Length: 114
Length: 115
Image (cartoon, rainbow over all chains, first blue to last red; front, side, top):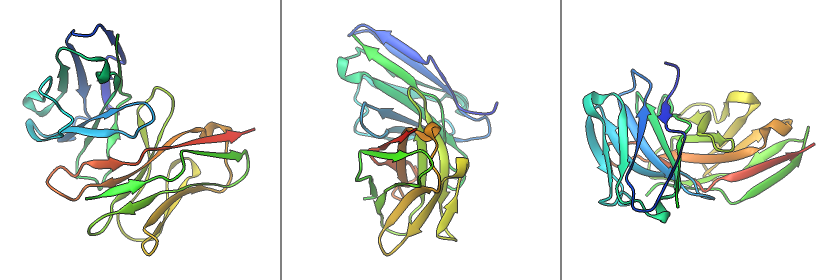
């Protein structure tokens, strides 16, 4: 386990469908972050887990979005009733000591809602 | 609130020339600053960070960055650019507020190195 793994890499879905993404962080990292990146923008923070506890959610995370991290290991991000505006790259990152050891990002899941 | 600004959407340099990608920051307290690089359809790759210590920070792939407290800047530099350096570069600051210590990113600078 040498990095953060995200699946799937790409997802195309029809508007109104539900989608779920998975993130497997570096095994010893207890902190996990989800970000969203739209074209021409920097990544924007969505939510944060410390172990299994979800400690912060951005206002960008509408009621249609839910994230979990059972047992403090992998995490899932679900989007219900997808909209075209949800099309973006969803990035996951993990870290051990907050910030000082850097944050390791996965390759992301690119969502296209048609 | 913490923030970073990348004033240039795009930077073009010729291969072999030095490159600079600019970043300025606004933070309360001591800044933790980062540079990441992103290749097309890929995630972010860590280049370097400034936490404390020497103002000149050396990172991966020959990149370095200079922390300037008086100018609140953290510019990314490389003495001799390669075509393979062409990518999207992001400056980020760690948010000190709250317990998350999340990163706050700039809008990115597209670096184009021309052969």
